[in-house]
Image (cartoon, rainbow, N blue to C red; front, side):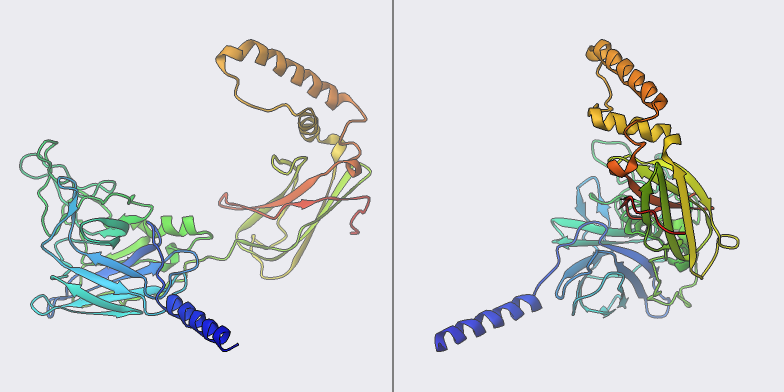
Length: 422
């Protein structure tokens, strides 16, 4: 008995030790830069902040490296003349947690961080003449880049060097390639694994033009909201959704503490559906509506391909409501020719595939047969969907806002022989 208890406590301690020393493997897009301030004239203070985007957040002891060294496409390596900051999470951090890092002084470097611990090597100073911050895991010699922000912009120079561009940042000269810029403390090509606008940003509104750089920049919270993670990433990495200024003595406050997840334009409740005597009846509720225009009620015989049975206008005044609104809709399935044809095709099991050229003749014959059957089915009074209580019918409701956005409800199965009461 004592030996079993000892083994139990050993495993228990090992579990908590491993949990306390866990680290999350990060990939490109798991964090995003959301603000920076170039050096303050009085004490060369540089600050930047990033937000954790990874679903589930990151675990305690996860380390991320930040460098203001640029990436050279000529050598496929980072520069070595500037600094590297090592940030390590001091606790489990939730998704959308914002972390601020400050580096002060060039002669005597000190760093601090809001949320986590930091150490530094070299001189990490963001220059007001343009710079970059690259985030990576691994090592400086073999980095895996997870995010990047670039604040530099070169114009056409002597020797016809190319201007900076959002897609490539600063083109670095290659010994055997086209003319480009030499790597300096202020320049960087976009590193491998990163895509500008997706998981990296060139924080310059007009790349390649004179005086395009800014000393201070941050995400505009009102423009960075999204209803899903891909939309949020896209908005954060769009410089049109940032604020810019040149004032090193009055930097932007960081962290900016944005709320990135926007509420859905329509708070949709449970969708209920029933069918009887060739009629489908659908009811749903909204708890709130924003900029909503109308609803489409859609049906499917296979749960995959849907057709619209009809539309219902929003009851909300000007499309906006914070009250509970109830909706109902009915449709005669005998009038739904498209749905009937879909049912027949699904029963026959005929795939709607692109026909290869060598099978054009047989494919044309098959298409003609399908078309004939479809016409016949539309004319029949007793087809497969004229008795919906004998066939599965899948229903969903789509809300469409005034800007053209669409939002789908969950798919429900129409209950046969049990019409909903109005």
